[in-house]
Length: 400
Image (cartoon, rainbow, N blue to C red; front, side):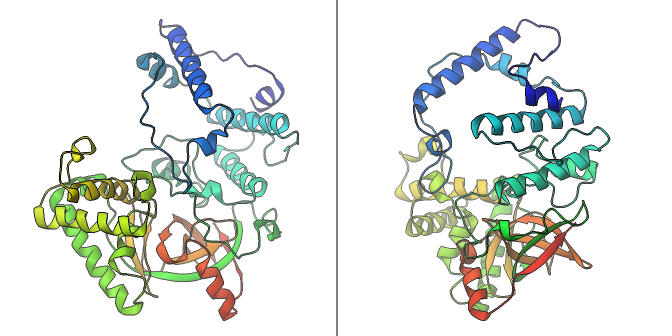
């Protein structure tokens, strides 16, 4: 499938017997594409859908075209490929063709050559490594491994199962790409070890910043939607933040806690400044802990009091940032949001090419990737600057 999709100008894919919805589905696809093209115009699509903070903008404009939702769902629910390897090689072939046509550069590499002797795990592993080398960033590692699939395939800890379907009730949403925690580190291009070493080992360079010394339970959707459990969670977070404040006076005040629980992306919900986030956090806590009720839904906020107008956007921001993550503290008094499964002693690191801090777990002489984290005080190169001031060296973490 790889060579087919890489070299052809068009491909005919058999999707099964026509059930009367296929033509309507493609008409809907074309209608959507035309409307998007008209609205975007000459703008770059990625910039069009994101605001100045890098957060995805939520459109308030209704669709002008008519679509058949049932037909679209039917189309995209069909198994386009019967073998996982076909699916992967087709995607890689399309990627190579896109690079050659759009950038007029060849990205052919032995890592991407279709090889049916490889297992799906090996294909995913090599494609992930190639994406890191080609993009010169750890962008692909922002997306969490879909844990049910990762466990089934026994992927290396650093390989995201990006072909799988996200389960919003089980997998956390990606953090914003507007951060730059590695600012000040040498570029990823300086890491000459990426293409060397054992296949299942990914050597990444960076600095060790801190380690986990306390955390809440995983904040599931059920926890965030249950008033009693959410109240208990907010009390626990307050207690953890108070202990952290004993270590570092500047990292665990209410404003920092509020921004941490929103993962710094309150802008997605209209909270543009630290002051607005703090007001929203205080109003939200008042609703949950004092009034013992949730702030009213967005559609009813205009008719509610000013407290609700501040509380509801904050709750929506917190909910999207926190579900299936853990609030945690570190030995140096920092607080953050981390991936599920955190353990005491997990390392907080900043890696070359990584916009976010990464949580790694020591495993003998190597490390396992646990996931990305939001830590308020080190999202824009602060940890790198401090390490440089102290003369701390850049080290290599061999991920397995």
